[in-house]
Picture 1 (tube, rainbow, N blue to C red):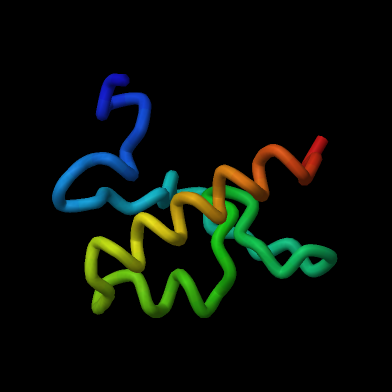
Picture 2 (cartoon, one colour):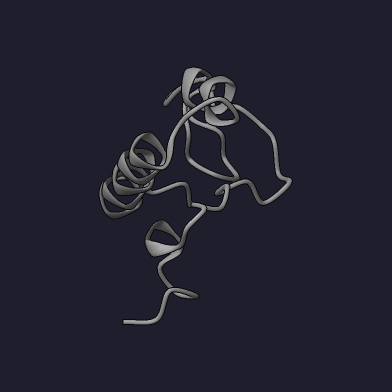
Length: 68
């Protein structure tokens, strides 16, 4: 499994930000990175375990939500 295709496996864990910062009112998620505002705010001060948990949640959201 490549760490490039799975950023949550990297150390340090990279941000999921793709510079498309727009919060969706219906879901409460950023349309670019699929994080909540609280996750975005907490990111820079969080440890890798928290960041990996956020990445896991992003993957779950990607599989359940359709922004199309």
